[in-house]
Length: 195
Image (tube, rainbow, N blue to C red; front, side, top):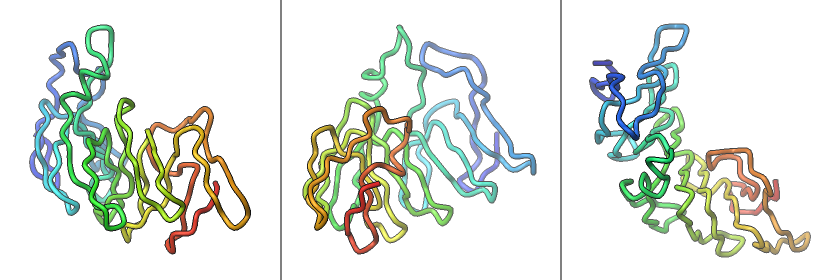
């Protein structure tokens, strides 16, 4: 068992099945603090932002959760991303006063426990009401600590009207795998910033 502020966690034993990833079950910072735990089975853990199923958890060096993955299976010829996503739980998230029913692939927390970003499964999409209009994304959303929208990656062809003119924000070949620091950014007053 690995002792954390979220409870004693049972890391993966190394006995792999067809969907377990081949990775270190527990990793540590140089200081000796726990950096990540890949759990034997997904479990529901309690965080400041709510209770979420977790199969992989990474930490800040102070012991606070950094990222959680509700499922963290190996995608292969024997286990598809669609099969993995089908088993993923849905949760309700408040984004600027609207409730969205999302099954997150990853939740990224600020050190204080507030949600920084929610990354979607590749087969999912989310339509978010923003100050720049209704935006569809297949990647997810990034939030300020206040809960206001910080950035979003619009789908191809999205047109944004700003005082400077119309823009089509889109990263043709996104290198990121997580939702933070996306192309269309907003300040905390809700004004769109093309990144």
